[in-house]
Length: 128
Image (cartoon, rainbow, N blue to C red):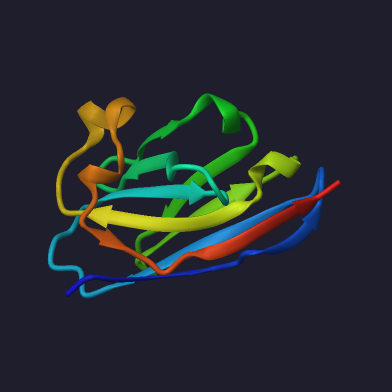
């Protein structure tokens, strides 16, 4: 059973930075499709960034391009998301998601239905 545990959320002022971590356990495959999603109060959950761990293909939604970076640590089975130049509108609960398939060729079209494993979330609050 794959388990995902997020950490690194917190409260920062606009313009600040945070690094989210997603530690995975129970992996049975060598490569996974991983993603970070977020959900603000009253809004639908949205995908933010994705990575296919097999070849490090990445994708970012336009609202975070140039500010967020998704990366992985093979040895630690951990995926990170470095978030810089944070804005008030980045405030949300952030979730890590994973699934066991090669999503590299479809990485621009992923949504939450493509992920079967989810973490509990970590809160990010950005104040002005």
